[in-house]
Image (cartoon, rainbow, N blue to C red; front, side):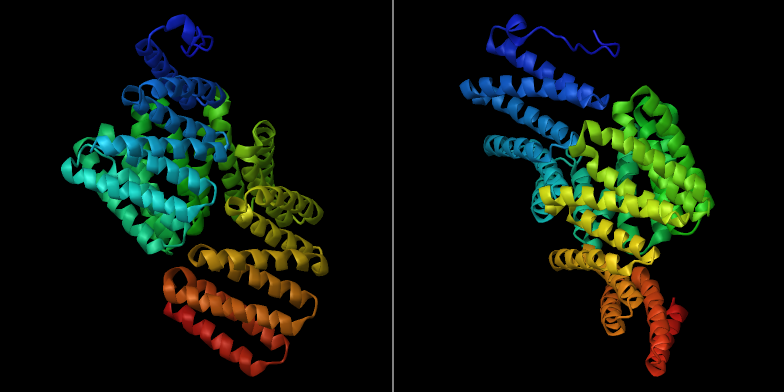
Amino acid sequence: MDPLGLDFDPPSASQVAETPEELGRYALDRNNLAVRLAEQGRREDGLAAIEEAVTIYRQLAEADPGTHLPGLARSLNNLSGLLGELGRQEEGLAASEEAVTAFRQLADADPDARNLAMSLNNLAAQLGELGRREEALAASEEAVATYRQLAEINPDAHHLAMSLNNLSVLLGRLGRREEALAASEEAVATYRQRAQADPDAYLHNLATSLHNLATQLGGLGRGEEALAATEEAVAAYRQLAEANPDAHLHNLAMSLNNLSVWLGELGRQEEGLTAIEEAVAVFRQLAETNPAAYLPNLAGALNNLSIRFAGLGLREEGLAASEEAVAVYRQLAETNPAAHLHNLARALNNLSLQFAGLGLREEGLAAAKETVAISRQLAEANPDAHLHILAMSLNNLSNRFGELGRPQKGLPAIRQAVTIYRQLAQANAGAYLPKLAMSLENLSNRLGELGRWQEELTAIEETITIGRRLAKGNPTAYLPILAATLKSHSLRLEKLGLRKEAEIAAVEAREIRASL
């Protein structure tokens, strides 16, 4: 017997079960064991248990679908979740699709379609992880519609708020931020009402939905409101963690991590550092007890810690935290590259920035090159999920070459980044137009360093055109960026002797700043 009380060397199904009823109970036990193992971070062990459950249920359902198809569908749903957590998204998607098919068949006979809605939510998550966002959105919208219909009959019995929260995340990733905010606000309002009546049951749901609300508010440039939502979530998780640390301490640490991000975004670096230091301390404690479950969280928090240190000019400390984050992700990626290689790429990208901030330009270049190599590998395997990471890493690589006085080397990288972001923005303008504008500005920098003034102006003028479009749709978020770009453009024009054009750009920049 395992020290946690979980039996990892059980008798086989043939040893404990002879009748279909006994086999069904045994499969249910395997299913429940898999859930408990996953909660302990022991996902490989959980996978073995749930695969056994699926095999047994599949055999039983072939002979008696009326009795055992529900068990097969539930176990497939759990199998999908575990495969996804292990980075095996394609297999997870296949299991999820089979679960949805089974639950659709069951829903035809049973008007209570909550299991179908639940499986659609899971399907949306799997599709989203694979970058298939439009398909994920369709599944999520169907889940919301199903739960909404069920809630009209019994509003206390179904998880409409949870599905709205998931829908909000997907809408946000597609750049449909106003719609994402509306869905998130409805979820928060529902959970707030339920948490007031039953805090033990719903306070953690409210806290989770508040974090998503903060994300959607932040995407609309409403940073102060995002911070307020996050602070409320932290307070809720602190209350929950004091009452039950085993269940909620990791949630408190995650919420502190998010709090640090928003404080940093608002320039409150000292407070942001305090929050992330607490998060790192908690995750370090949890990872010592259960590394499989919490090392990834520790690495993410260390990455954020390095950013907060850098924001305060504490660059040596920032580099040390970034190096530790990379070391942890490297260890995790060696064991499970499918689940962690993309996080290693992001951590290496940050490490490159930390090196650059200390003037360690060759080291920064080396980290940027490794980031591009990993991102290219990921994007070749799954462009929908990882092409944007490749574009980000190419942008960073170009900047490292620029800092070393080698703009000719950096130019192909930034041109490729612009090409990728242009492609992505055509499919999803809301999410990728800002990144296209950023990469075009960096392209103009490389061209300027090479003395190719006309091409430089063309690139920066396109940046400004996109900036105007973004600011029209979301002035709070993008007018300050447009003003900064116009000021930079003015200085470029001044250097080229185009004083009249420079003054026009400078005046517009001043007028925008005065209006803020």
